[in-house]
Image 1 (cartoon, rainbow, N blue to C red):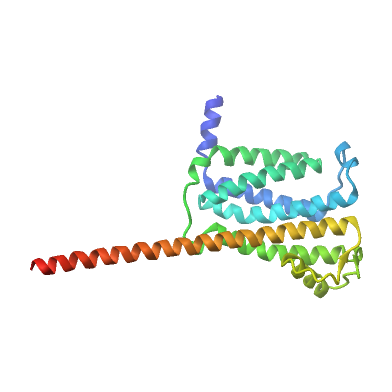
Image 2: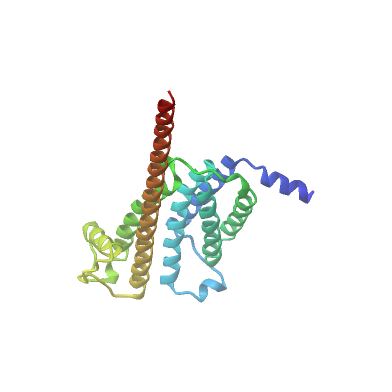
Amino acid sequence: MILGIKRRIKNMNSTVVAILVLLLGIFNIIVSILALQTRGLVLQLLTHEIVQFLGFSQLVVGWIMTVISYGLHRKDRFAWQAALILLLVSVVLNGLQVNIFGIVFSIIIFVLVYASGQKYRLHLPFFLDIKYIALAWAIVFVILYGTVGSFFYGSEFTPPIDNYIKAFYYTVTIITTVGFGDILPASDVARLFTASLVIVGVSIFLVFTVILAQSLVSRLEYLSEKTKKKKSRTKVLSDEMKKV
């Protein structure tokens, strides 16, 4: 019976797994937005600011999962690896919020994704590669995350952020690490939010740099190989002409 269950899990359609990951991502987004009432001994040890920070983190994870599900559907290896990390993060975040359904849902999908790992061996073409789609999605999200979050915590800054233009300006200066210092976090929750924005912004910048470098190297290798083949064909034709 156990062997039969393992066999079914390994043979599960990748599209079904992708849909489950997409649903979990949407679930995490909804839970973070609705800010469900939390309870339990664990949360009694946490401050209100940390609970809010966990909610924003869950929103980030859910957002990225909606992109990763596309890569899983296309059986992309990078998407499979990223999904495993995000699912573990989802388990932790739901656990800290004592969300039993979220914990169980995340664990079940983690098992399904991990067990079917042999299917995810493909790499998508450049224009469909999940890395580039996820990166573009992440850049858009971090701007929205920073703008909405800094406006939401606007009263926690000095001077207060009281409109979306200031919120957008603050987000851009933080994620680009410029930091003019004209707007400063004045509370722990504002500092936590700013720290998360810095981490996410710097991480995306580093990932963008690595992906761009890999793309350039791959392109140069392709052109080099193409040039070698062209020279080889030219040499063969030249030798044949000499024989004639």
